Length: 232
Image (tube, rainbow, N blue to C red; front, side, top):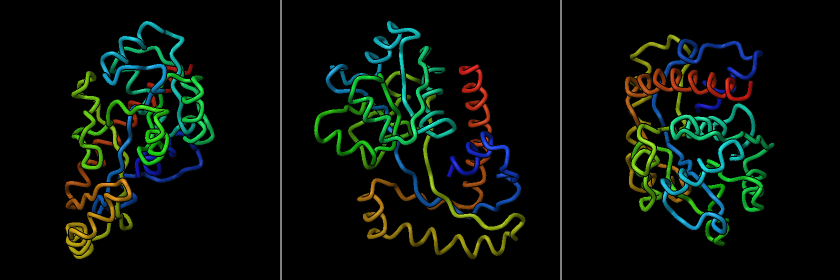
């Protein structure tokens, strides 16, 4: 996942591996959706543009929560602030659940979190989802726009799970491992089970996965630098 390969190693000096050299990508397995979430009682609009306009009025008093320093939710907020021109202060928690609880308690203004973590609070009317962070609309949340289409052009950040082999594994072995994975993920019953759990099947080729990994490595390096600058 991005957390394991690209984020935590840069926040943990004890991690001694190269994510692009020490592992051989086989296939991206699934993608889980992160969403921009606000308190439904204090943000009456469901528009990202209206939210950004209100957030700019708050200036440096804007607060966003995350599951902790060096997590995907942390960097997702950093990217939103940077791309939308916001001055939000990061408030790290020990878990995403704690951050969401303080969002309900009106101690925060927004959180970007895994959709599965906020589902029950959405159903109870306590929180409102404004947009997904992926580049395309999510199959599991087709009614929600992407942040890119809703007012933050170019925004794109997703969590994924992938299958890897050891570094320098031969292409012949990788091809043998990739084929049944992709075939299995295309089965309707498998897709149905994954979607029911809030994740979307991927099933990429090794080459497609490798390209996305290189893009992610560069993206997270920039975001981590931005996060450190914002907190210095």
